[in-house]
Length: 238
Length: 238
DNA sequence: ACCTGAACACCGTTCAAGT
DNA sequence: ACCTGAACACCGTTCAAGT
Image 1 (cartoon, rainbow over the protein chains, first blue to last red):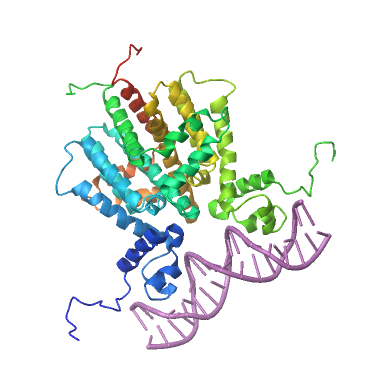
Image 2: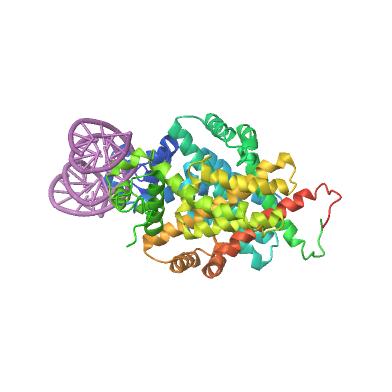
């Protein structure tokens, strides 16, 4: 066989961090958080469970790496995109946020993984992307940190909820719609005196648009940033 | 000593859901999320691990119940407080949020438990508390759901991060300050071209005030709500 | 040097047997 | 009726033994 240079790994591909992480992502996508197991993973990689530890420190490391693969891809087009479709920092913040939302919608387990590993790469990527735009928004330096953190926390909060919803839907063996319907039914049965608001929202829950609600929250924060700047109104434009 | 009437359950207290949940809270507080185990719990209760299943469905149920005990207590004074210290809905929203923040600061595992069990009681309590105030804020009915959801998601996002920080600090066997310092060091070592913002924030991370930052985020959202109402300015006051 | 896979020290959960 | 605790079916992780 022509053992030339590039086709190094053909059928018996050597184990590598990238291959392990890619397989982990596939496993998480198809079987959910609880489906990622060193045994299941090593089976798909046609090796023993111990072999993985040559390339990955432990399960936390594996989850963070899988999460980072998704987050890096989600942030790439928005942050350094070929076509700067979004003309203002506000538009770009919306694009970043929606990019994250859509990625988490496709890979719900990312929402749970992002919440872990504080200070780790996946979270930092998002922090950095938001940070650049908040600076471009002319938020005063002393307020930049808390402003970025607010956007970041909100996005992670929604991400975590999506992950929890997916996990529970999977546990119940039911799709998103059926899951929301079951929550709505529970809410509708709450004590009207103690939970008037939640009861009233049971209907809204059934037919709401996650993505639109998410964006509404981003817009609320952006509105807050705008109005905070107006406290000391510069000689600005609209 | 004086064995008067009330000391009904002395040494051999019957197992009850409340006693199990209270012991679980104590265990979570002292040993963290990973310290809550049916074996450790049954040991503290002087019984076998199987006995717990007579009162609790499974571990998820146990965690939700423990979480609810903390959340219910945190929301009680703010929602139905004896002294309505907060005169406006905005003040009351801040009080609710801070009550949650402080409770999670004392019981970091609540941040993780809250994120689970979507539609469950702990989350609903917060939703209800916020919902009442958002209504009082005269947010138009069509926007109430997304507005409440934004506040709720933000609070849960911060809660989840606090839980993750505590978990990691405990894993490293280190306190909050030392943990933040280690993250700051990691950030300061990032590639300056790829992560200029995060690098610059490493210093701010070291000496920031979690609680103040949290409140700044709440105020951003409240500011957004206010400015959204001004789009169609009623004959309003300031 | 790297993989293998049995073994270890745990989990949550069940269920026959006790009382 | 309720508790008991051994047993089951898993985990993540390690490490001698192989190649």
